[in-house]
Image (cartoon, rainbow, N blue to C red; front, side, top):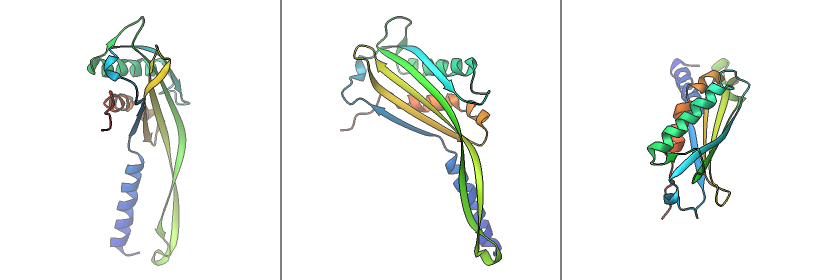
Amino acid sequence: MPKPQLMRVLILTLFGAQCALAQKVTVEFDEGADFSQYRTFAIRGGQVDSRSPALNSELTQKRIEADIERGLTAKGLTMVTGGADLNVRYHLGTSRRAEVERYPAGWRGLGTRVVRVPYAEGTLVIDLRDPRTRSLVWRAIASEEKRDPAKIAGKLDAMVRKALNKYPPKRKK
């Protein structure tokens, strides 16, 4: 394979690997909910489901809860211990995955080389529920992909912040 073509393949492979490891946040919400009526919140529970000892700990739960409290307080809500306008629940899970990349190889690039790239995917789900109607009114799903599951722990703050940046939801006109 000529050197310029080889360099192009390497650059595209590296760019593709970086795109695969980007953070994603999606939000869904109840169109009928009046988010202006919610003024208080209480964190009612959370769960961490990971085989990684760096994530599966009480310390991780405390970090997530502190980040949620900081994010919702910045949005003008007040944290309470008793009855609240919103109940917050969260779930963090990780799984091992692998991505298969193919690129030209061999004599004059006529063959194909297949490389398996392992990575860990961490998914954080934050639910806001209205206790009066007992219904889910807002959900954020943030996912992060890293080669090492322990590195997902370093991204939890950003995952919570990016998710809560989308609260309250913008209504479509």
